[in-house]
Length: 190
Image: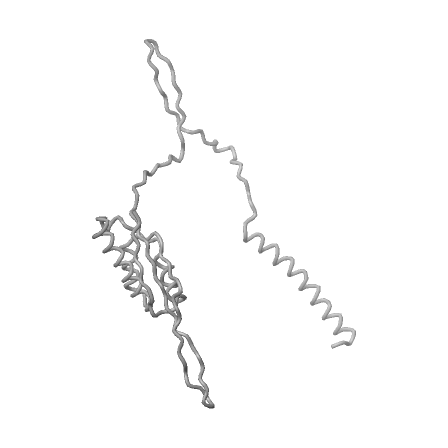
């Protein structure tokens, strides 16, 4: 169940608030609150207050426990701008704007997930019928190559090899440029 809390007309620029919001987005609540306490940004205070309001909504209205909640969505939108004036030279005035933000937090309850553990080496099961109609299963491990055999591995060119090729090509062009400057000096040019 989603729980929404919103703080409107916060006197901080959305750009500065989004910087803090991206640090705690999709984190469990306890970890997010600890992170916000320690961040040396002014926006952390406002985002923390909004999250705490969402927690209170979840506990009182939806009867959810704080331990099972996480931040599903955290958005910082632009609010209206307050227009102000500053005195300038020759009796004129320059306009500037005070930005505001709307902070929206959506909390959701964590769902229990079933984790499947993968075996590194899947086993082969062979069945044999024994007298009396019983079936016996033998588990044999997956075959691995022997010490003398080589594994076939597909080699792909990575990012570093591509960079290496480019640098070799650049070196060739630099060599030709050096030769050109040497020949000019020999002939008598500058």
